[in-house]
Image (tube, rainbow, N blue to C red; front, top):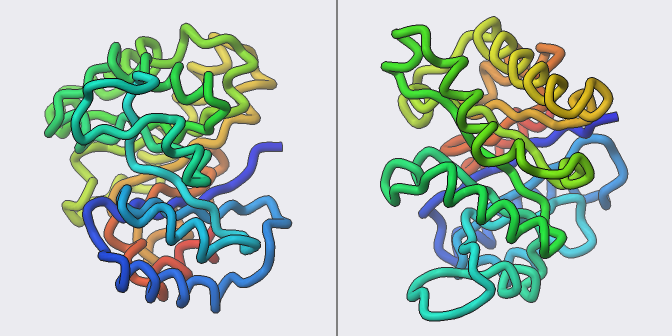
Length: 252
């Protein structure tokens, strides 16, 4: 049975003091150890990973990184390797976020290399993908999503998918205040699951967690998450507010 997840992507926000304050509030709300089908993940900036990992130890909150390089090591100024993340106690990484694709020109081919590196290091990957507004308006959104998944993930062996979490994020809804309707979210999530089933079989597809991301708030989370193929969310701005993040978690 696939697990549900709410992952908070902090992006380039929160210094160490702000991070500690947010984590302390979340620990007050979710103090118990991991023992349920609902996973709670936070993704601080690189400089805050080690303290956050120490603060959430023995709680049900997990820590992910926002990015990772594909190389083991070397002359890649400003980059972070899988070994560095693992050594810091981080075993989950977000790859393919639209902001990385847009601002840093990350391609599906590059992301395929990053995914492989993460899997070779026994890390879980939250793989992001989604269409632009022009793609949606032109009716090309299904093809765009199919291409992104096919190029980056569909060369993987079936066993590798136990460490893959999908995160559909319509780019036109990220940080814009616009949100895909529950019907639009379910339509795309069902399409994604069908793509995985066609490639790897229905059993594997039914076990894959598929998150929705795009201006999710406490006020709309329950309606979005009530769809059968929406298994939770990758949350941006709302994850920086403990009360709002709590409401989203409880909506799953």
